[in-house]
Length: 288
Image (cartoon, rainbow, N blue to C red; front, side, top):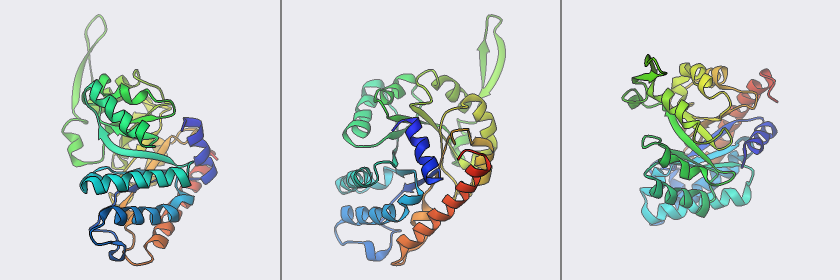
């Protein structure tokens, strides 16, 4: 899916909501558990959530840790979920939240796994190992690398928000910037706003104004709204572009909103509430 197609979906659904499919067998409703069959338990739960929320959602984001921990059962559930979404809701953007990133030949294999063998539109990528760890994910037309820039976890202060000194120009003029800003600046030379997005945590909304100075036209994937306490209004205030430019993710507050038999209906209601809030924001900013 290219940038224009993604924006068309945002306008059509009047939403920039991404739902994270972080499916934990310890949290899904008990009546959805099938004994000795984690694959079907995960897939059936995902299917119910997807069918209920799809009218309000422009993207789904399975977090691979919640599938890998169940071994081959989890992988089969992931593939079944991805195929189901593509077959039944082909206009929805599908993100593999895998946070991969390794030397070039290894990243090439990761890229083939998720962007060629499986039908994902995008994959989250850790940029720590540099250009050759990211560019293999940029070789597939219509596919995206979503690069970690400024995440919402406490540990982001360990590296991402550390100040580094730069020696720029012939006079070796001293200048500084945060590591996450270096990531934004440097990685733009590897691709374009048509195949690179960035992860920016909603709990770091105060940095979005600065981030937009570095990447004014790129889409940002924003986790942290909902259970983590991020503010949708703050994110929109500083992060919106003329083409929206945001995919705001909500996982737990939607998919685990209820553990009763009506869990899918409750998830639908929560997704619809977010869509309504997003619609008002898009109308206010004259984006739709």
